[in-house]
Image (cartoon, rainbow, N blue to C red; front, side, top):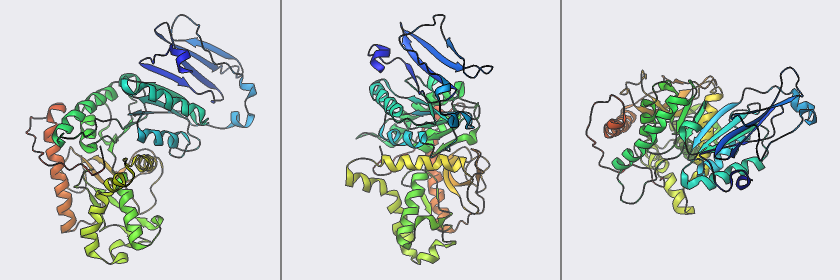
Length: 428
């Protein structure tokens, strides 16, 4: 279908409408090097009268979608749908996205009554793969998926986005230092931050996954001053999920018995899975497991090295569990947090209750009312051992901020003091 519409060439932004919305459907096609929009919209005065419109003066094309809403299932027409949300994803042709998109389109994240539109950003090299992803989404016939738009320009694909998930980043290649990776990816996230600032919805929520994700999120946030700083997140939910797995296995309890499990700090080898405040069936995890040596010497390195162990066994990174953790992170913001529980997210430290340096993106325990917002949980106990670990992660993030000061508007120049590779094993 794509070759027929585009003559074998993918335009900078190709839009694919999915013909399942009972009232509205759109197809965006390339005609004579112009992007022409052919839209069929049911009139509000006559629900069965469709009118055609075009973004150009010429109302013609090689493809037009026509259907009569009278042929739709009346039960579907009577369903009350929420307003469609726009979700933009960078690195959308990659392995993580290939898992994530289908979870989002199924309604398992934002809800079974929440229509969704995808705005998928790829690179010039990934265009054909992105076409294939879009075709698979069409073939999956998700009732909630109203539109798929693909392209390579963030200013087009981030336009009016309500949620943005930034997966794309330059991979760590042999010989590249962490400082070099911070600079390379920092330039990518500076440009994406500028695009978000220019065109995204004013209350857009941004989740950064591409590593080093904490500092990438910081750069993105600082270059998007129009968006609220608290709307920027870096993904540490995978670290939390891995911590819950290890606690459940050690306690021989199912993971649903766990609560108040959080991860502090940077998504790096300095991450701090918190066992002091964790609960198993409402009881302190340390009391239930009763092995302080295991907590201090085995638990943390097992969580930190889990990705590397997976990669060593199956020869590829943990894309599927990463996608699940992204879905979990989003659900935590649109679903009320259970009483007394929390979730982990790396968020802006401005005004934080734990005395952390402000102006960082730092993982902390959070809770939400399900409205897309969150608050930092302020009643976690911090003992001397936990405080030492948290301060080490804070120190690393301060050094990372110094390394990218040239990418942050109005930041004073700083020397880059990162000398160690603290990337988590198994991650690119």
